[in-house]
Length: 283
Image (cartoon, rainbow, N blue to C red):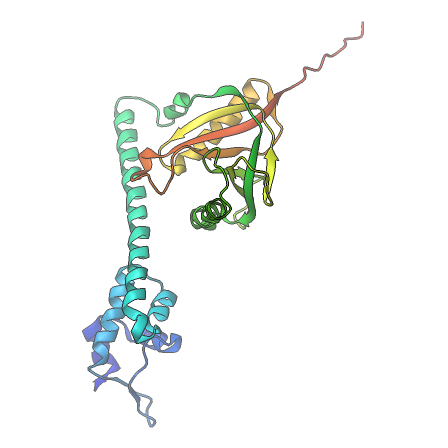
């Protein structure tokens, strides 16, 4: 048997953390002295503690680790492998995002050293006025927080594609997201996921066509904020007014793009020309 201090030293985990793990149900002492409350761990528990440490190093949450530890032995290897695959994808996405950020920073540093303002890239964002056609869209509308977006895109678009496949519906375009909230709310925003199809069935609606200010974002989805700002500035400067919710059309499939630079997203602002108000001057 090992005292909690010895066990702590071997596993490089503080005694405070070990007590917390006990409370959470991750790993319990093999023995607690009823007279003084001293905790003791068995040599066999070293492997379990090292396994917990390994999963933590893979950025699993304590709740996720607990769920893995509670798996039945017959299913544990298969489900652990599946969990590791998911976590590896998550980490790879974060690495890709960080790599994209590093490239962006390098470009900004290079421009600054040449005397080019850091925000000059906004001048390179093009805006054009286009006439869009009405679309019949299969949709799902949810209230989603910013933290839910990444997972939400995959979840809701997958459900829409599943319905299209099951009911043998006809695709007429790429996925799109429509943002209905009048202002940004970190707690949740009214978000509509949609895919244009030919058939009118339950769960479809008309998306009106009309005049739109359009821009194309190439690269990481973090760039979309700049595109939205540029579109809003253009709309105001050119004397237009927003008449409906803005929306994004994903020209490239995020699941098929290997690097953020490969993303292509069209952003549409439905608009109309403002009516000029004539002022009469009394003589």
